[in-house]
Image (cartoon, rainbow, N blue to C red; front, side, top):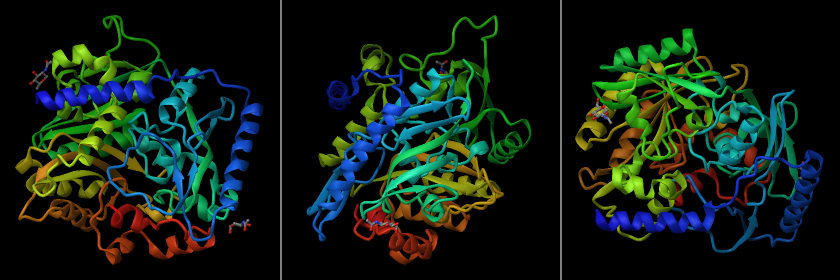
Length: 481
Ligand SMILES: *[C@@H]1O[C@H](CO)[C@@H](O)[C@H](O)[C@H]1NC(C)=O
Ligand SMILES: *[C@@H]1O[C@H](CO)[C@@H](O)[C@H](O)[C@H]1NC(C)=O
């Protein structure tokens, strides 16, 4: 423990000084100037693509943080395009309720800029370093998703860099096949350079009610009921074990009640997920609500001993941040200290139709949860926003409510077969008519994978938009890891 704590702290402090200490700009420049600046950088990218040799692989990137739980090797012969400068908020339009933003902008920046204007994107994924482009092509979800859908459903228009050096403007009217095809493409069709997304007004505080349940049947019935009838601003929850689970219903409010002196703070000594068990009603500032899961990386700060009050007191101000946990986690895995023959990482988010959620949790509790003490599990309901459209690479049933289950931990390898538990989860998700996100490890055979993720639609897009010089979705998300 001593070693890993020191390691965490050093890595955290180094990481902080390396990347995190940039002032956050909330005051935006003139949008006309911003758009001209964007155009200039875009033309420079187009030139680089035009100059590349025909046989080199395009590797687009440049971001210093990641939220992927795959450990891919970079291809050798590659033309590298650094798109990290595409990280600006261009304009917050409070009349049309739209924000225009570059694809590599992190939600941390985007939230700062939009909150300053009294609005927020309709769906903000829970970790600060997730970029808007990443959330569109990699299935972002949060507690407002039962109203507004996945992040990709909140997009009105995108500019996408194609591998032939053209930037395609995509919307429901223009290049609509690519517009709908970007969701779950993980950068294998093109790269999101700029996007317009919807925003909604915010109020200063959020009231959160945590309701306890002691069985899965009542719990998921309540999830469905609250999403249908009372419809608060936000709904999510956490399962602490098969007989203790919480549903968190959150609503904006302008003021605190008289008996509440100040809103709760989970950025230092307080631990948000613990509050679910201890407070039935809580008040947070809007920003604290948005980042409630970031400070302790949901609950995974425990692996860094950062839930210990002394360490928290001494270092919490600097270290409690998902990007720092992620850096330490990845460094640990690269270092070879993780014994992957005996421990299997199970880091997944899956969507299950509401009518099958009890069955999914019965499977999970029996095979994964109880044998490994693998809790809490995050739940977040999500439903299609506009039933008249289809996102072909991540098709869910247009009228069903789904629940996203997030679970992130390591388990003892079963039957000497590393990967077996992940495989069992993939099978269960398929049998229960669910879908699995691809940000983490996949264990599918290629044919099985393409049955789940719509090969005909994917191949058609890949050919039409000249993406064949990029790794394909299976190679990128499953095979190359
Ligand atoms: C919160 O509640 C849990 C379970 O109900 C209990 O074990 C824990 O001690 C409580 N923590 C605090 C800080 O009150
Ligand atoms: C690149 O591909 C798109 C989509 O097929 C096409 O509209 C565009 O003209 C192409 N650009 C070049 C430079 O060939």
